[in-house]
Length: 370
View (cartoon, helix red, strand yellow):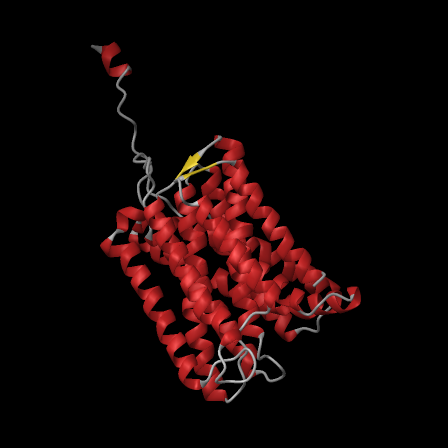
């Protein structure tokens, strides 16, 4: 009998998840670095501290997003991070529009860069590293294809059609057309969130979900603490990225690169938390979570940014340029065409990841050498 007790396979329950000291200390340091970058004159030391704090806050943000996700479950966990970073990003864009200067094309450049970075860079690296480690990964085509269809529709309405409409001069919408695009963006994004979280939640759950029942979910207090620290870390990430933008502008000007590279660099910094979270999920053989986070972030970006900047444009009476040029239109078509091929089978390998990364490299190169 004693031997049978010794061989009892029942696992010993672990204590609920708790917050380690670094998880609240790093966001606090990031907030302090952000305050220092605002009140202190910019310089090499301040820039280095801001960059180090930004990286630390990215890691902290991903950790807290995973804590919240462990409590609420998928796909709510990925939705938390996607919406949080997008809302802060929208606030950053609107604040830059209100600061004056020629910012007519800023929302277009930001949304376009976000789509290209996520659909090619983030998706590509997730599929590649997941394929290298796990040989082949699977996901649900119902959820991925519906997200891609919604993203392609909003991209056409908000970034492509303004180039071809004739009522307003240039690649812009009239007030009525802009209102329609804003309402359509909100409707499509809202329906997608409803489908993802309520109506067809199973479309966005992993096919081979393997829940770790031996790690209890965090307590309500820990979850709320992580949610608050997540917001602090994300605000620090976006604010520090903005504080680093003058240095980026100087580097771009010194190198003689196009101004579009500034927006790309800032978008890359802002998307760091989502990118790192998606890569971690792919390495853990949870490609469904990676796709939920990536495509959901792109949809939130365009679905929330366009209505916000449309309202700001009307309120501030500033022009808004939304239509992309011919080169960017070709890149968008290529991205969605290859994306549909990637998501059609529900299985991925390193081949699809390599193709998406080549398209991402072409996007970066043609932005640098238009």
